[in-house]
Image 1 (tube, one colour):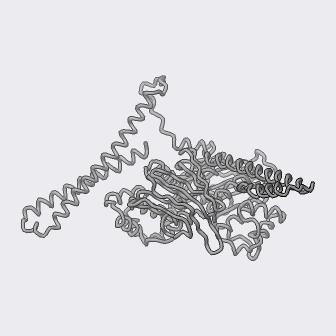
Image 2: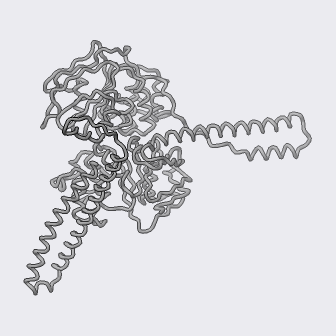
Image 3: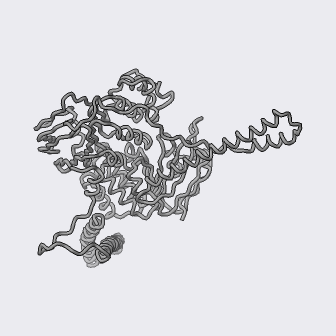
Length: 597
């Protein structure tokens, strides 16, 4: 069933046209990832489809009686004052029961005590989770999510991936998280240059397929464009030849001129990613010698973040530092860089090691009054190289001559990254370098970092970047830091691999190879877990209906003319409430088993 169909859609702000003439359809079960450069109109499009703004042209047809759930990009900055207020709004607008609110609270890792805390006291990730929980609790028929993974740690992003991939409803999701798109999308919509291109992809390798199809489409565009130019050139030559030789057959010349006017030039090929003209180089060639050596480092605030960590990281090594929000990743990076002292232990650097770093607060280090180009040139590159770096991060053209104070926060981060690329350091410390960057800018940064021959330490939630760059992993969680002797892709695979079955009790080696029987048993087990969730959900819903019926009977004024009936109903209501609590516990256990399965 079609949920929404739009055609000839236009949006502009004053004289600035964001897009025009775009069309698309969203159907039941679609998982659509909307991508494109920052400023390309993604949020403008979803706001139109969500009914928050009005189009300047075109039509939008929505299915009747189908409720939309919408999570705006800036939802975490506004909205309700407390978590309880957010949940009350959702339950008032939808049909969710009290037990579903409690389940949502648990699913999004909130405690009962969090309900009355002001949302402004929550971290960015907690606010995003709170507003996402409210959106789901509204029980919409389809959802539009604008950058839902912003500020979420990897554990929560993985949960959201699993939820969206398995949920039967349709989703339209704006995201720069390529790994997330890879996992959940069944279609990719690319909005760039005011045009919307649709790519049909397979869930599980969606982003990879999109990149392959995009490059094939651009190759075809280029061939069509070159062929149309060649045809116009050929016809113009024929006309010029007729005129040059003084043909008196004016009708033939006129006919040729009309034919020439009808030859259309194919669309100009989409702009391709340009290679940065300057590479990120270390001051000296990478060697196998030590870059950073740590011995027994420990750090604690109100609790221990990590203790007794020792390791040697060599020159040229690329290290990914991962863990949940608040686990101590940034603290560990600051200790490695020398910005923060450990409580115990020591940090030593290789002889003559030159370091540079980037953090979310680095934008405060931009030179006041300087233009973007001047700020980058101060790192030791020429005007042309500085403009190349800025252009590669989508700050090209006249933008390079604007003062740094004139840029937005996200644009200033890109200027800082361009300054970082221009330095000649032997060791880089990067804290969330891809935050607020669109996909083209992320790919540009990765290209440069992949060619860098110094040591690299990076804290990031961008798994695509970690997969490409992380040769070694430091995993921080639950008060401990473990140096994993594996690349990030291997670490991620091991982290989510099912536990190995216990060895046979008699110690004999298992000789039977996995086969149809094992696969069949796994399928049966998955079916049992799914049925358990369905059955416990039905039981909770049944008891909830019984409770409501009893409460309605209590509301009848005539009831109190029969004291014995009042007592009987009271006992019955207490029994149903206790049964509901037990059923709710069984449902939560079934959901946990299903999610873990």
